Amino acid sequence: MLFLAHFIIQLVVSTAVIEAAETAKGDNAADFAMICRFINMAQTLKPLPQYKDAVDALATEVAAINMTVAGAALSDLIEKDKTPETLTEKTKAPQSGPEKEKWTAHWKLWQAAKMKSQTR
Image 1 (spheres, one colour):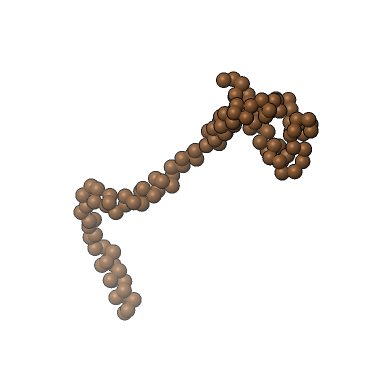
Image 2 (image 1 turned 30 degrees about the vertical axis):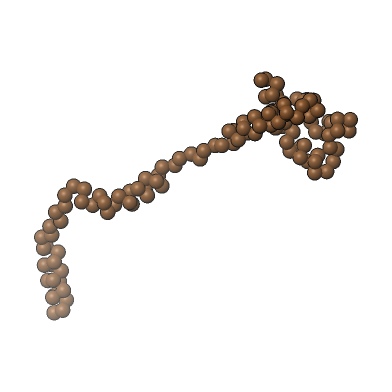
């Protein structure tokens, strides 16, 4: 008997007329605007700006200015075909230690700066 009661209740509920809610266009827009904004942000992949070229150009420009102020003593040491390892004691370039490491680390920048200062 209980089974029959459940069956009849299910039959009545499933055959009942269900009406859709009356909504005007845009009623739910405010509710979903933030979700849509987050979805759009997640789907939009903007490339990261590349500053390395600009920083390198600025560093070369500053080094070129410094090279012209330092004079020939420094400028004559730096040539295209030389490396810090090929400099001799006569040039007063450091031969070892932290100063030599600094020269090795900055050598390419100094070469680019010298080339830039010569093209002015």
